Image 1 (cartoon, protein in one colour):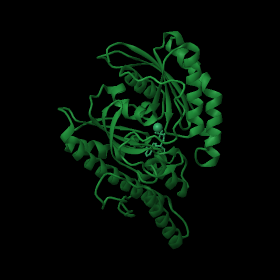
Image 2: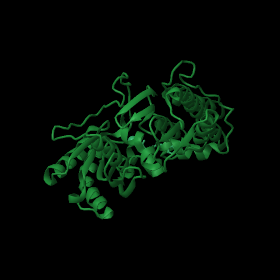
Image 3: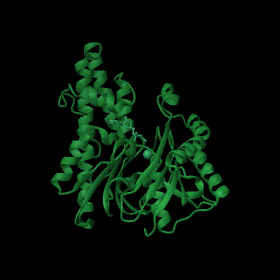
Image 4: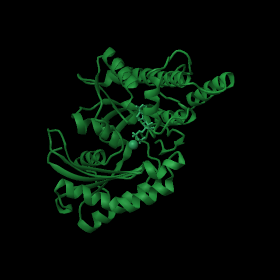
Length: 365
Ligand code: KG4
Ligand code: ZN
């Protein structure tokens, strides 16, 4: 990157409508001038998951308001923006279309260039936005919708070492919380309940740990938790507080073991390619789990790798990450026109076969 850029970013691929303005100056840490997020949690609350049609309508209603707020808060008018960066996939198609149509309208009306961004690239480049991490680094994305281990070589060059073949880990936390009668989102509820629990009482399966490679699976773990719950209910007629805590601790321990071991394997593949300061970065809501985070920090320390975890607001869905990824792409010569289309599936690593499976938050790749 040779010149300073001010980028407007739009994000609407799942259940957050977001817009942000980011200023990127070569050689310095990028500055987030505004970062507006309208969440939709209460709209989907009654349905136990994101309803695509409701999400699409809410994005269409809010995206222009969101852009206006982001520009106002940044102190910049559209005329002072160098490029408009928008999530073009992967995700729920109705939502992606809302953002894309808004960005196209703004671009054609103002003459400001348009850049389409892969949502996963937004997450994957966040450690550069927050910590100026140098390429190549290893990235673990773990949220309610994503689970991937990626080597990030450049803003448009990724090697996917592994991903989930079914549920994302956050999705498994949410489903297990539901079957134990705990509140949503399930991750924080399970983490809290696990504090008083004995993680050795229910020894749940560690899916795919017996197979080589970095692919993961979490849906069997959810079924194992269901069976363990049903056994206790059958024996005792119900679940005590301690039973619930022990189950939560056992489940959390299993997810932690899978993520730590698969990350260790990914680090072994990444290290020969890394420079002098190898980095493991994490993003996604699940990375806020203290037990999981500590396990990842331990693996990193054991292997002499720096551990980077951006602040939670930038680990979860936001538009600052889309603006930043757009800045890097734009600086490298990328520009889209009105033919830019919405892609429900869009794997970051085009050479790696697409993973099957689409969770409650849309397509995984
Ligand atoms: O990244 P995120 O906010 O949203 C997307 O999925 O896009 O991640 C939300 C997911 C939820 O499934 C939630 O249960 C999980 O992250 N999560 C956690 C914790 N906090 C949030 N999982 C485990 N432990 C936590 N402390
Ligand atoms: Zn995301």
